[in-house]
Amino acid sequence: MTNNRNTKSEAKSPLYHAYTVRDGKEGQKGFWIRIGSFFAHDDGEGGTLLLDALPIDGRVVPHAQG
Image (cartoon, rainbow, N blue to C red; front, side, top):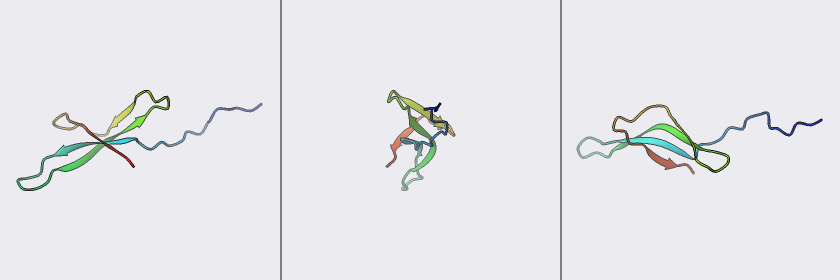
């Protein structure tokens, strides 16, 4: 009897990384701080956002990987 289930979980790469963008000092560019990752569900219906930190201003900016 064979088992068709995949017992070893495959590591997925995130579809997006989540960033918060902080303004730079006067005359300087802002800087991006990575605060999490977004993984798409296998069925193509949505996904999971995993945050390692919360942005102070409440704004999360996604950036596609690739």
